[in-house]
Amino acid sequence: MKKFILVSLIPLSVFANNFNDQIQIYIDQLKVEAKNIDPNFNDFDSKRGEEIFTSKHIGKKGQEISCTSCHNLDLTQEGKNVFTNKVIKPLSPTANKERLISVKEVEKWLRRNFKDVYLKEGNAIQKGDVLYYINTK
Image (cartoon, rainbow, N blue to C red; front, top):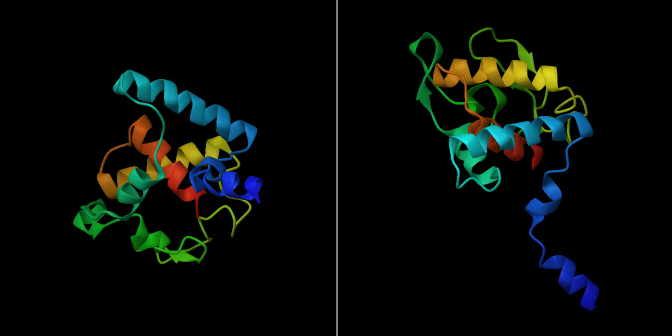
């Protein structure tokens, strides 16, 4: 009983950010960049990532969009690109085992999607926060 209580006091976020080795190296690199941006930086935060992912902005083609415009709020479900109508496989790594395994793919899609929604590339803190958020879904 005591062991159960102790484990139940550990925040879920401790377990939620287990990445494969390649992605963990990328995350560690982002942490170094983040510390250069903000000397008080401690770690990425899935709550900040959720805010980034769900907030609307005037993005590509002057449309008000967010990441959820294409990926939906439920990342375990398919989405649809609002510009091309192309179906997007679930973004959640638990629903789609192809997600968050290749650094090259992660970098490409973060760069492209930040530019679509924010009209600029995200910084290291934003990217890490979004990756932590996606990995909790």
